[in-house]
Amino acid sequence: MDSISLSKNKFTGAIPLTICNSNWSRIDLSHNQISGEIPSCLFNNTMGRHPISVVDLSKNKLQGKIPDTFGSECLLEGLNLNGNQLEGQLPRSLANCIYLTVLDLGNNQIDDIFPFWLEHLESLQVLMLQSNKFHGHVRRHHIANSSFESLHIISLSANNFTGHLPLEYFPSLYLKGMYENDDHQTLHSALSDVTYTFLMFPNKGQALEYSSVQIPVLNAIDLSRNLFDGEIPTSIGDYKSLMSLNLSHNSLVGKIPSSLANLRQLESLDLSNNDLVGEIPSELTSLTFLSVLNVSRNHLIGMIPSGRQFDTFPSSSFERNSKLCGIQLQIDCNPNKSGNVAPPSDHANQSNGANFDWIFAVAGYGSGLVVGVVIEHFILWRNRYYLEKFMNTIRFFQGKRPLRVRSLRSRRN
Image 1 (cartoon, rainbow, N blue to C red):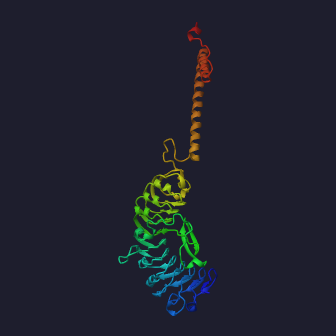
Image 2: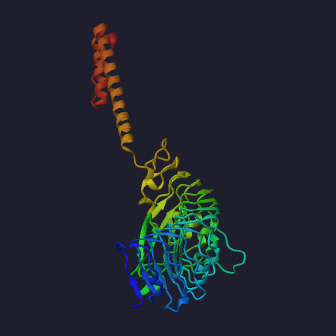
Image 3: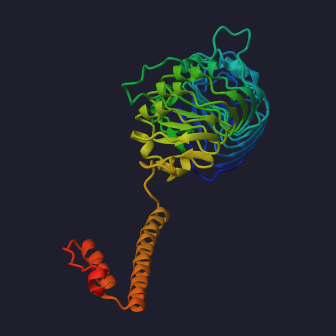
């Protein structure tokens, strides 16, 4: 047996040092209540034992630093430490793990700059650093000749990263459309023949958990909940393989680039809680796979595009944009003109009904007034002539022939 899976139990206490003497190549102790520090010998391959390829210690109560003991012969392909209380900096020796495919360090207290020293790892496909204390600019190291050439999924959300969006830093997502006709691709890793739960990624507005054999090629970027500023570059439209893009909760300005319409595989787009201005590009209605959209809490204006997917999005996708209007918000873009964009609300129907009743009430009041005046006139003058004239007026509106009315003079004679 070269693997051990003790996940989803109620194990407590520290990881025993004897684990370092085992020949297990795959270790899964996730979803327990294990505490203490990670044994420094766990990642050291100089002890003559079988090298470890997969370690999953996620969802425990581990503390301290990640051991800086990844040797030059590191054969690690998957490392998941998500959901612990780890702190300090990332070990620089992790760069020795040239076969690393999946690295998930999310939901800890790691305090460091962006790990540019991992950019040469040609096999790295998933990098999850969300919900830590990372800070500073995300930029390419000036010495490196390449950067994250195989990356498909990156999450930097809920940190303190600053500066402009570092999209150009991830060329593996640039102009890549190789999966357009294949919905069943999975990430290659040492997990392909085991069933360890390994990755959680926020996609389509939900935190989805993927097992090793279910990890799809999502081609996803999550840079939300940071301090990124500046505009969304128009070059975002060149990342044609993107299926999920989350730039929410930053300080982004400028307009929503219409080049986003080039992302034909896009299923989830979240630009909410920024300072974006201008109109929502009508070109985005061509994104037929888009099932989740959120542009709320910005400064967008104008009519919300309609048609296709846009007719299915709830009002919450557009709320808190004071100058947006359209069917989705039930706000008429032309309140004083015919051909309303939005169907009339109940209030509008009540108003129209009130106007209708008011018109007929006035008409009734007016006719009553005429009748009263004429009758009063008749009573005062006691002359049938006026009564006949009044009756003919009524017959006229009833479509009847008028009666013959003798003139007032002939009556007097």
